[in-house]
Length: 287
View 1 (cartoon, rainbow, N blue to C red):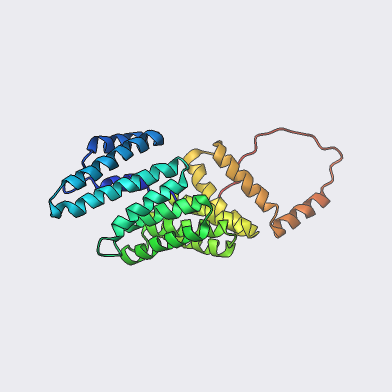
View 2 (cartoon, rainbow, N blue to C red; view 1 turned 90 degrees about the vertical axis):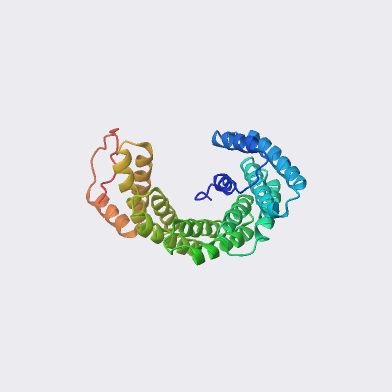
């Protein structure tokens, strides 16, 4: 799941002065290590921050600070879960994500939008583990909250629908997968425009689902939309642009009407000798 950066969002939770983060140094060092992709170091700092925050909570006799301490500790658990996940240690990640979720759910107001951070993290972890039904359960919980508290064309709704579509694809339920990807695309086109990188991602995913369903004309149509954007942004000689174009050319040979026309042309033209010419193929013209 790529539309939410779980650690970055978690850091926002403790950014306010009303929270009692006891070990801001290790917390910030974890953030710096995360930015560099050094997840083991980030995990080590986060574990130190957690222990310091637990000790601080036990030493604080001010009852009014109790909830603030809990939220800080919950953030620590979330961050630790995130780093375990990045390191491929999914069981440890889930253990800490669920501890974070338990703290968050204990706060009144079940529809609290920040719950979606934890639901998405848990869903993404189950997704990576191949436990797709559990992943679907938590993605769906997140989507339910988003649809209640956000505008209908919000990018987070589209992102979660796309995640659910991907899970359906992995489960082999391709028609449902296509339906969710189309819904995500519609939201992104409406809210972000047809040039946004997330909309481009949807063009690929919708095209991919049509290709899996062997609806090659529709797949070609959506890949061509993606190609048009890449030609403008990267030029015709870019490797990815060339790759997309080659895929479109290949798919067109599978479209019955195009295949029939090609066969008819080959029958009419029978050259006496075929010369082998190596040329750099130009991308198909994008309308």
